[in-house]
Image 1 (cartoon, rainbow, N blue to C red):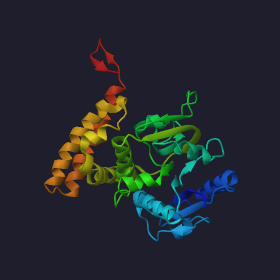
Image 2: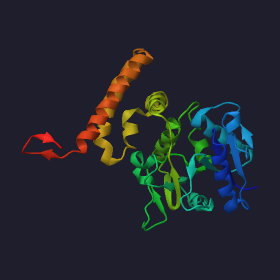
Image 3: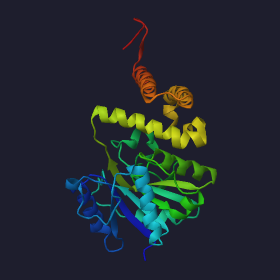
Image 4: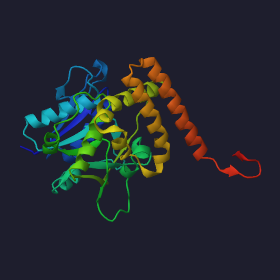
Amino acid sequence: MNSTFVVVLDYNGGEKTDQLVSQLNEVNGDNYRIHVLDNGSDPDKKSKFITHETGENLGIGDGINCCVQLAKETGAKRLCFIVNDLTFPAGVFQIPLLEYPLLEKGTVAVSAAVTEQSNQAILYPWMIQERHASQPCREVPHVDFLFTMLDLSFLDEIGGSPEYSMYARGFDLHFAYQAKLRNRKIYVYDAALIAHTREGSSSTVESTSFSRFAEMVTIFFDEYGLDGWMEFVPHRLRAKYEIMRMGLSKMMEMVAKGATEEELRSSYKLLEDMMRLHDWISRKEFEPRSGLFR
């Protein structure tokens, strides 16, 4: 039995997932079985490599929970979790690159590095590959679970993951915060590189953005508060997120008073506008002669 359970969480990936799994099998197939958990895909968008199915779309968070359960059923000690919508810039990816660092005592997660063009580059700049790093692994405060090796015993130690997490925001922040409390290590391995970009219409992105906020309130903020969340914000984004902190604090008060979803969406839209204004101002330089931004 292999002590590492490797699984791709797939939703409507179809041929893209097939290509991903084929690439993984090409290099790792002799030593690892690549499982594919279908998370309620449409019939015409299913992978041909499916090994397990949820039967409905449980979201990323609960999808990870299912992957954890599958791994435990096999007696595995580690879970290599992979999302289906990523690519390998180098063309191949060797799973042992993430497995070996996890054997170090006190390490609970090892993640692949991401390209500068990946979605995570802004919120998690420490995940961007450092090509000339002095060490192959870098300790980081937090990683987005894209291609990540997790210590299953640590998940048991912290009481598992939140019961419901559609977007996994509660899951990875909970994991990172508990790791910090217990003085455990989370690493990014620079030689293991992935690219991750998520496509979607502006309306879809806006709806998802609000839903992610709602999930963070119900799963993470309730337990750790806003100060806990701010610990995982990059320093260069602190000013912007202080604005967000004030807005979220107000919205949490609204939630406690029973505000409607429409009222919360309206408040969230105002908060987003304030943050966009901050971004616009921060990109401008002051022109003394005219007193205007240019």
